[in-house]
Amino acid sequence: MARFKIYLEYDGTRYSGWQKQQNGKTIQGTLFNYALDIFNTNSLDLQGSGRTDSGVHALCQVAHLDVKTMLAPEIIKMKFNDKLPYDINILEVEKASPKFHARHDAVNRSYIYQISKRRDAFAKPYVWWIKDKLNFAQMEKASKLFIGMHDFISFADKDMEDKSTKVLIENVEIKDTGDRILIRICGSHFLWKMVRRIVGVLVEIGRGRLTEKDLLYFLNSFSTKPAECTAPPSGLFLEQILYKDDKWKNSLEPLIFHSQI
Image (tube, rainbow, N blue to C red):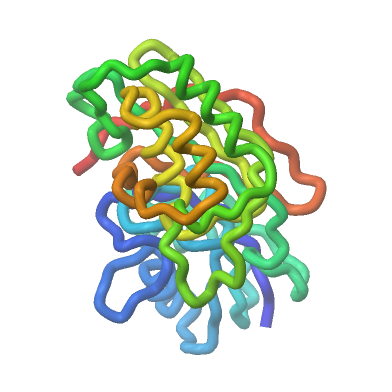
């Protein structure tokens, strides 16, 4: 049995998230089904670095594949991309140590969220269009309050797999590019819906409906208000998964896509 490290990108619009489901079309499930065909075996395992929600995209998800094969990594990549639908693409395949684990070995992750300040004929599946005028300066100032170790129980639907709701946020970067506001959040890991609720709260601060005082309360006491502010999945992209000795990308620029749907 060989282990491979797989880098992939996907448009999550047509999928019920990453994780394989019995009655839903998912990224992991789609990859797994094609792997059964490519390797002609039922004896394989495919694990991702983490889940993405329904409708959420990935610029670079990482997975590991365990399978008995003599195929070279570049051939595996080619065979997957020959079969996969247009909205899933394998970027790279590498041989990996048997001890490598896509999720357990990840040390940091980053997400980018795109807010559009105007109606866009092409980008609807990849942005959250907000008609209201947003106070960017207030959003940027408030975003820094998330940095550090906090209990994000108010920002997540806690499930059975989460042993703790404490998360270390290393950095939050927010940029106004003219037509768009980009938000990048880097952290040790993320809870279910956490990033979308962080974005939603920042938007409400930008609208003037919430304040920094409210945000500090959410970080120090349990509140259901962030759940009411959950941003839609369309604007959210898993950007990077970092392993030991990996470095963050520096540039934060608008992600331009033309929908193929």
